[in-house]
Amino acid sequence: MLAFLLVTAGSALGGFLRYAIALLIHPRVGGAWPLGTLLVNVVGCFVLSLVNESVSRGFSLRPELRLLLTTGFCGGFTTYSTFNHETVKLVEEHGVLSGGGYAATTCVLCLLAHVAASILARRLASV
Image 1 (cartoon, rainbow, N blue to C red):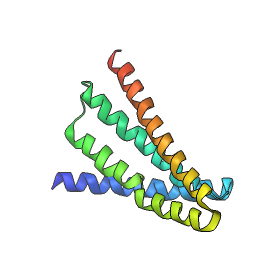
Image 2: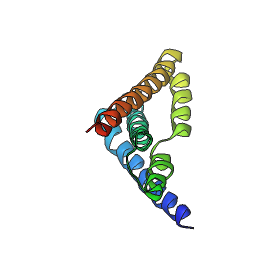
Image 3: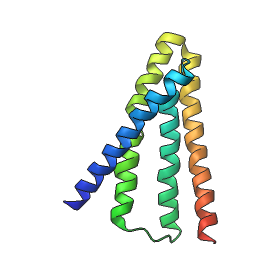
């Protein structure tokens, strides 16, 4: 039962922050691309990778906290379904180059976030 409560709490916090970021970014930045979704997905990939890579390198983290941060928070914070919907909408409204560019940029930045988190985890493990 504790696991379900941790995932629920983490998801609620992640979802809240995702929505807040979208509300803050789009009115200030504007543009065709949904930069709030892009930002949360890249940050979420970084956090998830940092937690998992740190644990795999021997960093002691209680399983409950790992569950809260990964499945809970990152699961509620990041969003594939919104990314997919917004990509299709970009293709429909602005063309294949805009939608494809957004999708490719998201994928590349998320992979780079994972690489950066892995490097950071390695460095932290060697301290």
